Length: 94
Image (cartoon, rainbow, N blue to C red):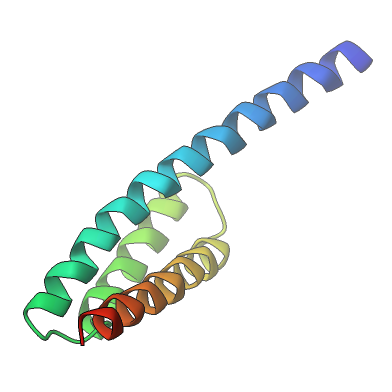
């Protein structure tokens, strides 16, 4: 039983590491978006894009048998961080 437990936990640890690296890559891209928005005086948030992404992610979550409400909360957390970054980038350029 312990061997199986440790094996499962090892898989979880690998997934967590993958998530961290994927989030890092995602934030590198959103930083680039923030710089472009700041350069062209675009607002830090894009409610239309955010709504479309939530809808898309909820569908992906359903397909993956993940709770869509959880996926939406997760995306909302990420988006709020991105918007804060975009605001900071814009403030630095001002």
